[in-house]
Length: 476
Ligand code: NAD
Image (cartoon, rainbow, N blue to C red):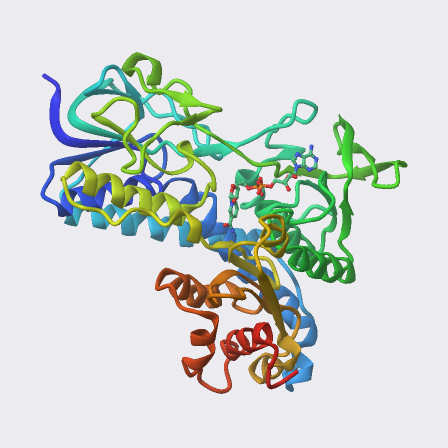
């Protein structure tokens, strides 16, 4: 006999587990199918352990200028393997936390690969997994779950390149790089999006010679140009080989390393010998072998098509997170999970504010943004004024010795709307929250300044950037 549920969620990442909890809170009987570790890529191989590694990289570099603060630390020895063990431990604790929340909300966890076999059935196969990390699939009997509603939250996996297949040995994906037992002497990182930038920071801090190869003409190509320029300059100063507008022409994987042939911006080819390569050219939604065709769920360009309530083309089936549409971000997935659960319960959900999704890259200094870049405002023909304030003029940043970066605001001239906000600097990931709330509440730029900020704090740079966009910053 099939087990009967109100909702079966396939996938327990930040989309799936949040959807499961919200559905349970709304009184539904819920099961969550997971092929690997509870918490998905975000908790186990992605967001959480990489942030633990970036925290380690911050300390690794801080030791080089501790004497300025009157603290002599003596000889510094770096061990990325120990940092990776700690990162794995942090991830394990997160998975245990989610298990506790499932128990508290009476959500049944069903281990195995979930496949739709109809509009209201999910078959769970313990002998297959999603291929994250080096985990082997489990064993056991297949089980069939019946559900009034199904939420597909299967997430994504790293993309490979045809000429550079990820093998977990010489050629890594982020799943391998995050738990590296030792820092390679040399590493080639292909792609300078969030993953490439964050791992360039980690490996450089732990002593690797890093070659960061980006096909487009600047690193962090989705960010405001000022952010890309600042990070490019700072990374080069650290000794990272930043290659922008560089095409990977050939990759020769040998026993002891990899030879990368790169055509540089100036048209010249360069051959680079590296011990390991990290492929960081994006992630692909997991929509294969999950039975979408059997259930009749429509896809487009590799993503599942959904409406504003996260319903797919089949009324009983919903989809959330990386399988729906970009950006592939944990916080977007969680919001979609809540929207799906509330839609199933028949609640009125206010709708997801897709125009106000924060983007953060947790390299040092951090990069965070929301809304339009200056180039986008220009392209759209908007009447705007940009204003920037550097952290070098902020007292709190100077006390911390972290003065690189800025806050930049794109202000609509007529209505004072915050069209876009861009932060490069210490704790940018936390500071961007102020703009997210400001934009959500439709605050004007003037109001961002008039709300009194405590002194001395980094947040004063937000008020000053607001004033800069009005033409009268106080401290510059
Ligand atoms: P991405 O799409 O953000 O960046 C990939 C980069 O690789 C792009 O800049 C692209 O131009 C470049 N590229 C593609 N093919 C190339 C080639 N052949 N040679 C050189 N460069 C090439 O992807 P990502 O950084 O791999 O991240 C994957 C997903 O995970 C993204 O959606 C990202 O937003 C998300 N993510 C987010 C965070 C975060 O929020 N901090 C961290 C990690 C990952």
